[in-house]
Length: 203
Image 1 (cartoon, rainbow, N blue to C red):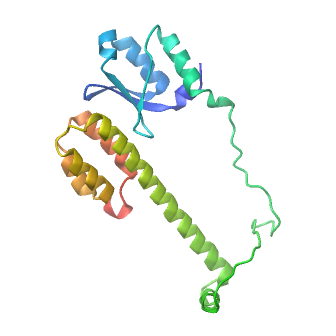
Image 2: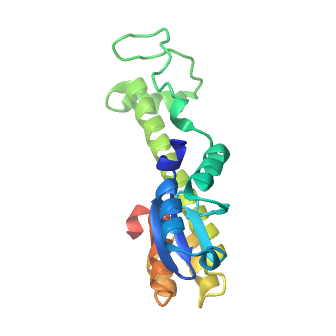
Image 3: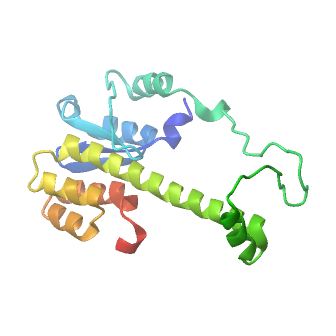
């Protein structure tokens, strides 16, 4: 059995209601144990990280289904990522790497006037920029996942387009207002996918 199936999380909908949620292996097993073939034709399974639909071939027994999925998604258990940074020349205790920075005189004057001097200030500015970039990336990914699911399951719902506009405008209150009367399981899953879609000041 592919270990990837236990680490790949998803949610299954039958109509507008959730019938299973958890790892792909758990969801497939639950669905096969509780639904008949007629229900399976109306089942939709969504990736919890991307909001995209997952196509599952439910023919055969549960083990047959899981075996095909394991081949489809691959086994991630043998993949190891080395998170240790490559050691470079610099001050060993801080891991500092020297390099050349070209600035105008007024930039150097401003940097030198900051607490800690030019190097400390530059490191702080870079860290702040990286943090801001990571936040924006999370917002975009969350919005994209929400859009994917909403398009598939709520495209004909009341105020769908208004909700999308509020989502991309970062307007949390209006977004929640427009989806308030949607089917509870659909609404709750949309909120879950959209959790990182809004700037912190709107939360």
